[in-house]
Image 1 (cartoon, rainbow, N blue to C red):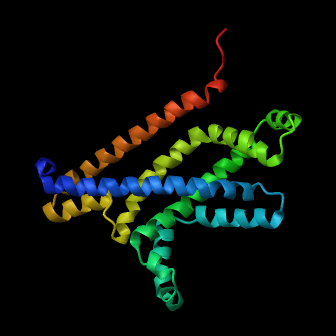
Image 2 (image 1 turned 90 degrees about the vertical axis):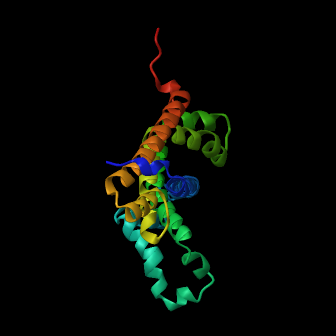
Image 3 (image 1 turned 120 degrees about the vertical axis):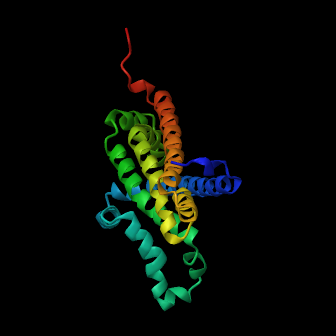
Amino acid sequence: MNFSFVLDPDMQALYLQGLLLTLKLMLGCIVLSLLSAIPFALALNSRWKPLKYAASMLSYLVRGTPLLLQLYLIYFGLSQFQSVRESVAWAALSNPLFCALFAFVINEAAYTGEIIAGALRNLPHGEIEAARAFGMRPWTIFKRISLPSALRNSLPTYSNEVIIVLHGTSLATTVTLLDLTGAASEVYSTLYLPFEAFMVAAVFYMALTFGITRLFRAAETRYLAYQRPRVA
């Protein structure tokens, strides 16, 4: 094995470029999917059946198909339609970064929406009844009681979703983007060192996963402390 290439400034710049794009995709996906997941979760729990069924069908379609397939359909599939190529949306849909982020956000919003919807359904009724007793309106109850409590309770599950998002960004290399996996592929094709090239990328992914895990553990310790049994 030969890892001497990691001392080459050009190889370091290549991996750094891939790392920055991976972080950009991951953070962009987390923020946008979370913002999309909240109204989606409300739709999943809606009492208006047409809206609830539409949201459930969309969730089934997104979660029932692989992320790679969704990415291919958005980036390669839509381009075959002349109406799409002639529309104002083509400037965005011809951009691989936009298509990758769009696919990641749609996919993650479906999963996160299901997590938040489940957390909202499992909220203790006592919290809602107490808020009503104080005269809070439905929107105030949702903003101050239901949503914060659901987000806190979702932390353990959502941490796994964030890690899945990180690993899912490796698919960006299939649409010509140079993320961490793409950087490793570039090193492999240049130096013919497949094991070493991808092992360096794996170290980056493991370091990022460790950092994400520690951040969520700290968040759980702070925001879920009330759930731990008290010592007499």
